[in-house]
Amino acid sequence: MSEEFQIGLDTFGDITLAPDGTLEPHARVLRNVGEEAVLADDLGLHAFGVGEHHRRDFAISAPEVVLAAIAARTRRILLGSAVTVLSTDDPVRVFERFSTLDAISNGRAEVILGRGSFTESYPLFGYDLSRYEELFEDKVSLFAELLKGGPVTWSGSTRAAVTATTVYPPIEHGRLRTWIGVGGSPESAVRAARYGFPLTLAIIGGSPRRFLPFADLYRQALEKLGQPELPIAVHSPGHVARTDEQARDELWPHYETMINRIGGERGWPPTTRAQFEREAGPDGALCVGAPMTVAAKIATTSRVLGLSRFDIKYSAGTLPHDTLLKSIELIGTEVAPRVRELMAAPEATRR
Image 1 (tube, one colour):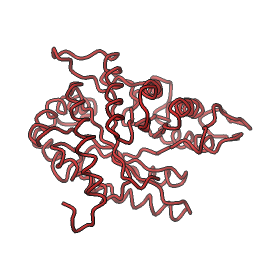
Image 2 (cartoon, helix red, strand yellow):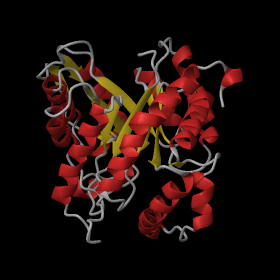
Image 3 (cartoon, one colour):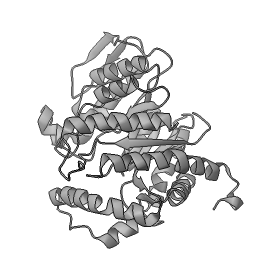
């Protein structure tokens, strides 16, 4: 684990607005994500994650393919999923794809295993949603065995057994960086500790402080199980502009449309500007504002939860590509350096 505090970026390939106000086609959004990743690498950000979805409003359904294209255009940045929906995939194939990415990128691949907050992949790939928990537990156990390298023997309840099987290509050096993504389940935090996986907390609403029990539970479980101390990261949405007002005004209409679209599917009441402002405030999940505002919020959350990394989900609904590039530029040149200064400073001097 690096001693330097890490700042990364995540995107789902949200379908964005074109300059003429129409929606960009999925293909162009995918190409734009590549440009965004190259800029993040040029700016020295630590990680770039792309999330798997299978729905109209997000372009990325095959994270490893997107990441392989990015690997060919970047030099240093870690390349990962945010998340890979392991429940509706095959652990052997997931390992093969990410071990291939690791080889292509010269050791820069990482995977976040999760169940996802959307369920479209279950009917799409023929899985029974009623086996939600069983599928994930079973497949994580196989993936953990694959990470050990060498011949694997495993049996479970959701797929065929594996007997003395070696999977190729092997990881060239060390072990594939593998995280467990957790959105609010204590059982998932304990599971991550049980398998010795670093933890990523998805904080997309409410006060980040409410996730402290999950971080504490994870650390306690690691200690009880005799596991070494492992990193904890946060994935949280954000947008940066020159001023707080500009950042909020730019994000709000796109955030409103996105939240109300998803909320309509899930039976939520329409969101309001007042709710948005609370989430964008000091105790909310949104990292929105001027560089110093966002840096202070990231540093505060990171100190409270004891984080090693903070990944900003910089795309939000239909926010245009050019606006995303400006936000990434500010994150790389102003937010990240200030966060590291705040994290390194003695408590009495942090402001």
